[in-house]
Image (cartoon, rainbow, N blue to C red; front, side):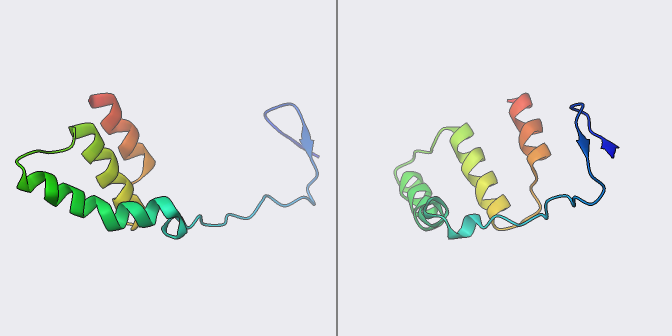
Length: 83
């Protein structure tokens, strides 16, 4: 048996769960943000207005992560601590 940090033991024959990628692009939230967020930003810009900075950063970061543009969760944590 192998020791586990929580004090339990695992059998060597029990394999670790296999990683399965989540598919945020299949969610309603993703589809709504992808379709309407750029339109909202353009509409606000035409009026000389913007969303609060933290809202734009979070939505831009989410879209980057969803599209696999190399943004990771440690980048998000670092940005939050500096704002």
